[in-house]
Image 1 (spheres, rainbow, N blue to C red):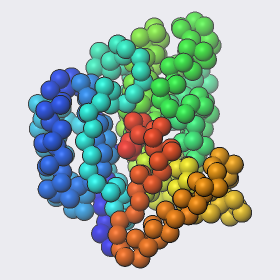
Image 2 (spheres, helix red, strand yellow; image 1 turned 120 degrees about the vertical axis):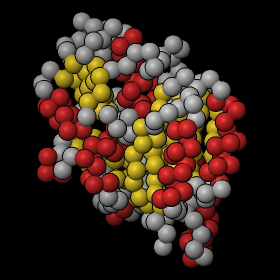
Image 3 (cartoon, helix red, strand yellow; image 1 turned 45 degrees about the vertical axis):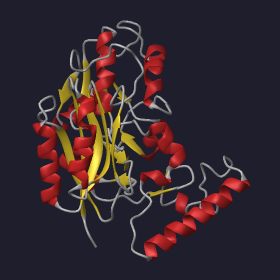
Image 4 (cartoon, rainbow, N blue to C red; image 1 turned 60 degrees about the horizontal axis):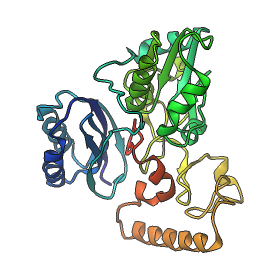
Length: 328
């Protein structure tokens, strides 16, 4: 079985000629059998890619970093035992992670990066407000001890939650604000938003949860649960090891080992979360899709990847960790 090298990457940068690079990047990746999804916009690049050889992946990263506007990327590597994406996509976007607030530019103002080795000290401080900038279904799979769930469905809802629950400096008790996400991109943009509001002590986890799980020993960790990723792996544990969650291909959420024992869980068809959210006609489509997936696996073809989770991915395709696509 081929082991795929997976790279979650991003960078906020003034990428003014991004449109001219779409086909070049896609062609370079396809020539090396690299799959995944990249978003490019005038504010930078974001995405997750995977390849069957380390050489091909190194060439791909070198190619991207050689683009004059990009330079050195923020990259987190991991591995997958099966092809995590069906094909390579390079999309042109207005934002590489959609917040929907004009004028928020991490290239101009951003919070303070905190290395994983220093993160525990920051979030253990009782004067620190710890905010998970990911979406609620990601929070449900795992988060840091003491973190607040904004209960958002998409990153576009995050500014509204901040306005209501955090407010401007002096409106709440928190003196320090620490934010995190899968790979670093959402929390980086979130800190730019908080800084524009006038907050001074705003911090974010450098490299995101994935870097923390890679660098911090489990016995010292303040992470609880698994980290959701937007590909076939579903969940990641310490040491970037494959987790025990599986994907419900009906709704796209992760299903815990306990949830997999539920009578409501039928692979590809339903889980406890979505048992009442689809019609019987939908369920029949899901059953047929699951049958095709099982037949494809018997033939040794690639899995369904993120595209198999249309309802969830349609909402969250532009989130970090794209990882989504990535990651962020």
